[in-house]
Image 1 (cartoon, helix red, strand yellow):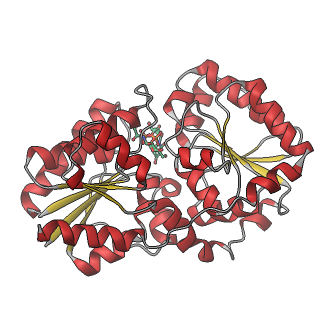
Image 2 (cartoon, rainbow, N blue to C red; image 1 turned 45 degrees about the vertical axis):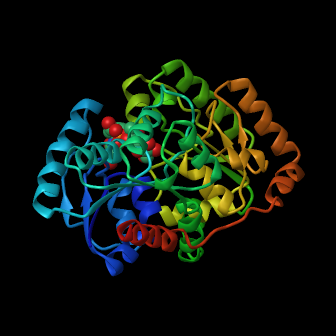
Length: 362
Ligand code: UD1
């Protein structure tokens, strides 16, 4: 059986890292990288750190408007799929890359396997929400992280035969890769002490394209930084918007370039808490027992809210500052969140491979 996996962004590379070697072993496996992310610290560093083999195809699509980016990807992916004729295509989650891959595979009648299927924020203004809905509705095999995601798919009329729960790829990747991250020297490099700093990250379109929201969030981050050391790895999208609009970042904030994956895992495990609008970091933080205060109004990972391991803060400056201040004054509250136990799965990739074999045997 020939399988083609299509990836293109930082979270896809990280969360697919345990699966790619298994697919190489089990199938004739073609790996396609669209180049949606292309800076070394958004792309190459992850391949290096995680010892991943080079993609078979590098499409070099880069940044553009969504229509141009997705169109470029589709044209190039179509050429490859026509040439390689895979028996199935795998796409992961919700960036523009999986959307492009899903549309092309479906148009060519190639079976589509969608990983991280069924996650919903129920906010249709997020580009990712539209992307994942389309991917799910194009897919023949939908591999969901949990029962909730499965229920979301059933509510949308997806046939139950195509849905299999395999667990979380993010939790699996974090646990598997943390032992490589332990010896990372990033704490020394940044002069940090365990538990004495927080991390902030910000890159979501809905938080960065609305300047009023971005300004509020930057002010909240600045205020937290005046009370505890705060490390802010700046995503290129956010950097560009801040520079173009002359927005101010408080001088208390330690702004650094995007971190490598192992650096981030190391800091995540050592920090007091993280404030972030990232989807992936919510689960990575939970895997490493660090509370994540989410700078969004909704999240796909509600199981972590239900467990009270993470907290949904929204984007109101005063609310964010007051919650963060409360934790800084009462560290025992962070300890309570850390002590909540989380079931950690470590065999998601194996289950994905079994589900694919099962699909072909049908
Ligand atoms: C994308 C995904 C998002 C994911 C995120 C992780 C979509 C719609 N969104 O958002 O789900 O959480 O990746 O980072 O696909 N840029 C660079 N260098 C790079 C990559 C991006 O400078 O290597 C800059 C460019 O100015 C670009 C902007 O960042 O226009 C946005 O990049 P893009 O890939 O379009 O979306 P992300 O915000 O990264």
